[in-house]
Amino acid sequence: MKLGKFMYPAPPENVYATSKKIKFVQDWLIGHAKKLGREVRVLDFGCGNGEEMARFIIGENVEYTGIDIHEPSLDHARTELGNEKAIFLKEVPAGETFDVIIMSEVLEHLDDPVAVLSGLVPRLRSGGIFICSVPNGYGLTEIEKYVDAKLRLYKIFRWFKRKVTGRGHTGRSIMDVPYNYESGHVQFYTRFSLQRVVRQAGLDFKAFQNGSLMGADLSGATIFLFKPLIKLNTGVANFLPFWAAATWHFVLSRQDEV
Image (cartoon, rainbow, N blue to C red; front, top):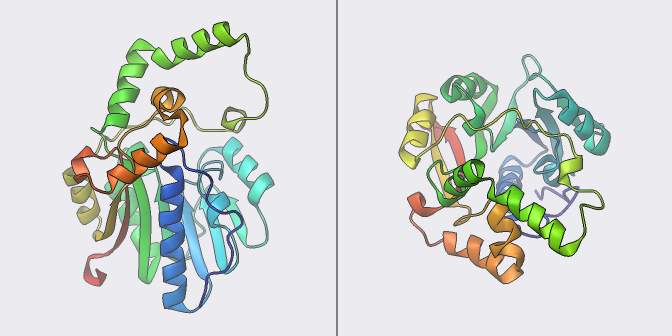
């Protein structure tokens, strides 16, 4: 069975390796649909406004449920993406189970990731999988963000650019879309601490992929303005040891089903 068309194809790549992550998720959804031979029930836990993941996985043969605590983001997702087979809620519906649970850039925001993962395991059907992504807590992206937060380099860069070009922001951007800025990173994973969390939740790795070498707001607005460099940033990560990559994409299953 083929999964069918997604609502939108993966977007052009950016400094955050977003397209690489989306394609990783899409490929695993397609593979799981083929394995099941039927429609795939997907829970997108921590879906946010839907612009970074839901938009690209809602489609034919996908029964989608997005969960988030940020009501303005949910309102946006419902308006832009909701349909009879794609719903957005604040809580996981009682008693419902899913073939795939997606947690894209979520685990680093959780005070108790083991408890959350463990609580979701019973919602996973037999043979089901988690598809997740997290930043390397000690990778170049987190280092760049830490330095930028201290020195405000990106803010200075934007001010300088406006002064030089004489132009401010025009048009619609991601900044116009609701986003839960108050929920920052509280976990900074190494591969080994991530592995510990996963195994304590009764899960284990089925697949693991590096996302990019580096990339945050400042480098995205300066170094990685050009497509060849963006491509290099994501491509070179495939050959790096896990500790050198900025982001990780991975698939989990129950320990007795790996």
